Amino acid sequence: MSITALVVVFIGGLLCALGCEPFGWWILPWFGLAPLYWSLSRSKSYRNNILLGLSWGLGYHGLVLCWIFGIHPMTWLGVPWFYSILIALGCWLFVSLWGASLVVLWCVCLTFVGRTITKKRSHILSSVALWLALESLYSHTPLYWSSLALTQSPHNLNILQLGSLTGPSAISALLVIVNILLAQSFLFYRTNSKKSIYRVLGAIGIYSLAWAAGLVLYQRPLSSEHSFKIGLIQGNIANEIKLYPAGFKKAIAGYTTGYEQLTEQGAQIVITPETALPFAWDSQIKNGSFYRAILENKVPVLLGGFGRAKGGYTNSLFMVNSDGQLLGRYDKTKLVPLGEYIPFEEILSKVIQRLSPLKNSLQAGSEDQILNTPFGKVIVGICYESAYPELFRRQTRAGGLYIVTVSNDAHYSKAMPAQHHAQDVIRAIENDRWSARATNTGYSAIISPRGDLIWRSSLNHYQTFVDTIYTQNSQTPYVLYGDSLNWSLLLLAGLDLFFIDRRQKTSKIKES
Image 1 (cartoon, one colour):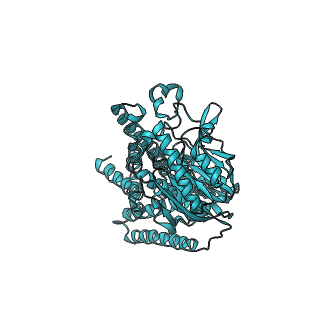
Image 2: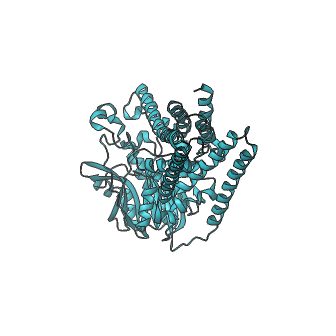
Image 3: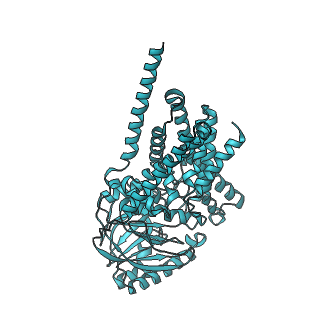
């Protein structure tokens, strides 16, 4: 395996990564995977192809996830500067390798197919089916973020509309198909110019048809049910003080003032960010000015804070009604490794226990939660959960009428809130729901069911905003059928490979 091949494939991974925010060069991923497939088609060595997959995966996931370095320095948590940079580097390397492992597995599977079944025949169907199956499997693991679909959000809105049909699968599938056709056009360039041209035309045609289909979906009228005014507060409280007395005072003062401003502007419900009041729901909140403001202004609040649970605390969003009563709460189910819980705690807790703000692992909520509000059931995502489409789909099927996501991205670089916003755009389209996003330092936003940006805050500023959103009870094909495209394609690919193998064995018997 030449160094040049690895470098070219690595650059292809970087090109795909540049499609993600904050770069947003969404056109590059439509040919950034081609160098990898081209190289795989010229090699049947497992070792070489594993290295190729690792190189592309590190280029893609390494750049997309570089925002993780924003956790450094962690001196405010008592971690020495040198150990802080080591932890940040270790976290970045681990999550990048985890993402790259998906690409490596894809390369191994394609190598197996190419060596044992299809021989010289192209296998686009199995290539796409395997990629989608792996993305689907990885989306059920504790670490998941940068699917190929993320590279098109939030700018390529017409293509993103296909998410309402199949979730992120159709978008990832299109990217893989177009890249494979372009790679094959290079493979045929010297030996068969007609096939080469046909592959390029095929790639352009498939993209054009998909874009046109997305345009039709984008232009459909919204089936809005009821409207109400929602208010957002972006507290802008630095993590360095958030969990200490100075942060508590600033939080209570800032959110109380913001709540009162929003109620004066006609907000009918107010949303605060993740852990806006960074303590448990008890007398500490009920004796504060924010709680008194609720009793005086009579406007309900979805309030971020910590909940008590057996064995510790939860990262929760509380539904507090206009009389200050707690009507329900949603507990975060997808916790952040190292930040909210310690994997293999018995082994690692003594080394990295200080990474948990509560000095203990948080408790995960159950998967079957649904939160009721005065305006109907709400689909909730807390921080990292925005990366998990199935979580939002389940709540939509259970009757969720609009989406609320809350987050605190203050401890990462500026790329993180931009990608987080891009995730929420995809979720709004998949579920055909209006989405309101409240964050600590940005980006807070209002997003339409078509992914249009109604409003987005500035980074690192205290801001409040009120606007009208709508409830909807429609059920998109994705909400109804989930990842059925993935498994249907995998079944078809398996049948296709089975019959190819049968024909090849029959032909060998006849020749002998």
